[in-house]
Length: 358
Image 1: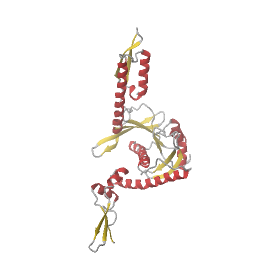
Image 2: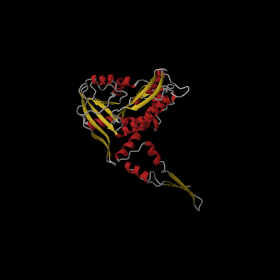
Image 3: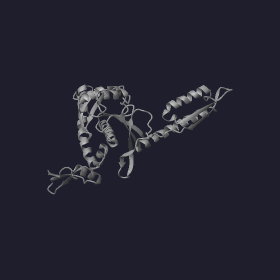
Image 4: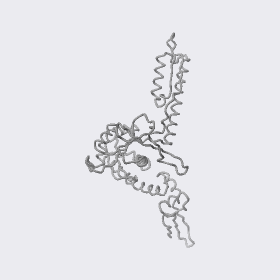
């Protein structure tokens, strides 16, 4: 569990989505287990025995770096599953023979958001797609900047300690301190050259200096590896980004639909809780899918917030003959409501106008 929840039993929900993001099959598995070691069990369970080693048509398996161990990739090859996975290799420089093309653009600003280029790996006989994402680059550079600031602050503290009364001055202790800092901030420490000058007479550190090393800029770059030779850059990237649909589905179920926490104690009730959540997600995704078809890309929380300002109003009046009139109608739809109703082909006035007399 990423949240380190060791106080409660955990379960794993396996979910199969189609290309439009609609759930096609689900199954509950044992929780609190290592993901890379459960690939065979998960695929076997979701396939329900309908896919064998000799099946002519097999689905393409797509997963991220967390599950893309070499053992799992070899298992996919042995079972003849086509795959698209995120490479775990640390060196991510784009090869010179890879021609980068735009695979995602911002239509409003006419700017390229993601570039991708194919290269052949002669050792594994795989195609490797090197991708450079502008948003990912900004995010990684922001994280690196924060770590660099913290790393330099710690180096400055170590240098100032050389002149303090109770500061760490022994050369071996200072070197040990610098080593721990490099390990703690290993994301950026390789970009620095840190030197500790020793005083040969006192066996103490005399000076700590550091400077930036020239390194290859790899922020925003990731590599996809696949055995599919029939796909071009755009198709490989499109298939891989379907993972975001699955992530969105689980994020929606866990936050907006209350999939967790599960307060039930009996297994059957836990299964029922998850099943009801999946049914709710079917309805929710149907609405979001229809909205996306019309270019409206709102999350469910935004949809609910915007529609919550249109309400049903009951007006009560007393007539001259002492009878009471109740008129119930919807408030007038505002532009945000109209955008959603137009995309769903719904009336601006949901519900009929009701008039009752008592």
